[in-house]
Image (cartoon, rainbow, N blue to C red; front, side):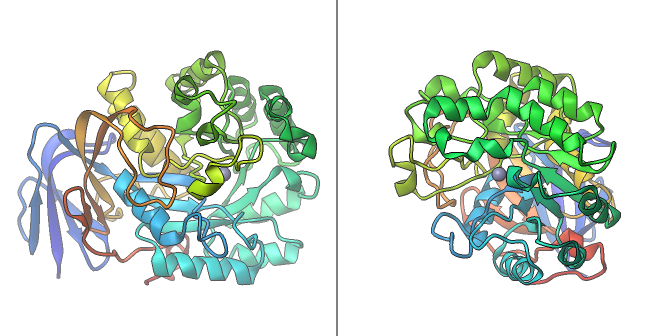
Length: 433
Ligand SMILES: [Zn+2]
């Protein structure tokens, strides 16, 4: 049996907090089989013993746009997940709004196949809202992670659709803006800001409470305002926030002029941003998710009013957040809750991801911790970033998927790993590429 021992300061924030030990991973099944003091019984041994190195479970990004299909010129399943590996992320969940829009059984299967063939990380996909309930009943059996609701769906989704998704152990993930936000008047920047304001964001959650029953498994993604989070939690919904709404992107960029920082929902002022950080520190936020939204460099160079919204950060956002730990703004436990076990729990995967214990997936990141500047991106097709020269709190030194060394900072990519869609695995159909 092929086993890999990975030794160093292990930190999962649950049972292990920096003690030196070795993870033993069965490379065939991709699962951790033991945590022991010495690297015994392994055909491969990798030891990381520098003082600034820490080993954690891979981060999970539950909101990404890998594009692909006819939007592959912006990003595809390979480039987006390679960027994720270099960023420290080992499981991504892709959004359906590529072209064509993914909301039929056939398109869901096509997209899941593309992910199975090309992804370097574990993966899944949210379906868009299909035209009929009958179609939705078929789609929830295909290996999707849940249903994504966009503002334009608010007036045609009903309680029954949410029930069907939840009955299959899946989540409904919601973009909290009102349908009116996309009207043509919003091509004026002031109108875009007004139509995507905190008041409208809160109103969209209130509207949702008229559709979903209390404590449905509904997740509000990229909340940007403190009161949105309060409103969502009062109703029993879970919430994530993005790194770009937390970090001070707008101070470096005049966001009325620079498309690199144009994003929906818009970046808020520093008062609202400060309140979002407060929500994070008060444990009101369940996860951090990137909303990685790449466009081609040419598209992002168009004039501000017509250029597409979206920030692509999958390759760097965990590095930026480690800075909060290095600066002692939050503890490593808290970071891992937001980026590993929080999203695992929301997705219903906390028996498979997020811990260093037997039976858990061998997705493992070796971090080099310390202040450093963010330089160029290497793997995403979106090679631009509003975080250029931002100070990060470390980088990925090595990354393992299923116990297999996939990436090393100095060598680059070593192999494409055997990846899984955990939502197929839960049904007993492990996916292999
Ligand atoms: Zn998104």
